[in-house]
Image (cartoon, protein in one colour):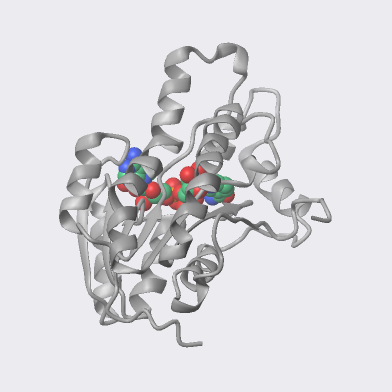
Length: 258
Ligand SMILES: NC(=O)c1ccc[n+]([C@@H]2O[C@H](COP(=O)([O-])OP(=O)(O)OC[C@H]3O[C@@H](n4cnc5c(N)ncnc54)[C@H](OP(=O)(O)O)[C@@H]3O)[C@@H](O)[C@H]2O)c1
């Protein structure tokens, strides 16, 4: 399928590793010039050189998207993106009784406000130019609350609630905003998540890793390029009638009919 996005410009936050990296590689393959943002220089450079080796056009920005300065740096490198991927990290599992106001503010500063600020900075330009594709990598936790991930359940729901309203205001100008809700994916974040679930009396890392795969109807973890394929389709020219959606990619893990 020709997505007809060759020559477009994309700004991808959290794109040096995991799902963000896969999304950047997939877009570059479609002829989109990609600007990658992450905090760590080494993974950024590795991803960029993989993209260049395949003929892609890529630049890197070392920045923390939870800060205003980091977001400004990202926007300075790609001031008029046609495509925006909002992605970063998550918060560790825990018990809500232990979380302070500061913990909640830091969760919102990581999972809710950066995408909202980036949308605020880019949607008007996209609407003026008549094309925009914004995709947020969120989590299944907004649809299937994860008991140990209260900060994620809460802060990410704030983001999808906001997107639900904004996405209906931009679509008439061919600017769509959608959220991808990954289930379990084999990435560093998944490994960190499991490490955070370990307890002295509980199962070890390998046991939890295996059990989580077994509990999924697909019997496995998702691979980052499976998210990237969906993401790339949403960025295509023909996807202008899909907006405000929360799209699960979870191997059938969500048990509901609708
Ligand atoms: N993997 C899963 O099973 C799963 C399931 C549901 C939801 N999620 C969520 O999906 C998102 C992506 O997950 P992933 O598994 O692809 O994660 P990952 O493999 O850990 O990659 C995260 C990427 O984001 C960058 N990043 C993190 N914090 C950042 C910050 N403050 N500023 C700029 N860049 C930042 C990382 O680079 P640096 O660290 O160098 O900045 C890296 O490039 C996360 O929010 C995660 O919580 C993951």
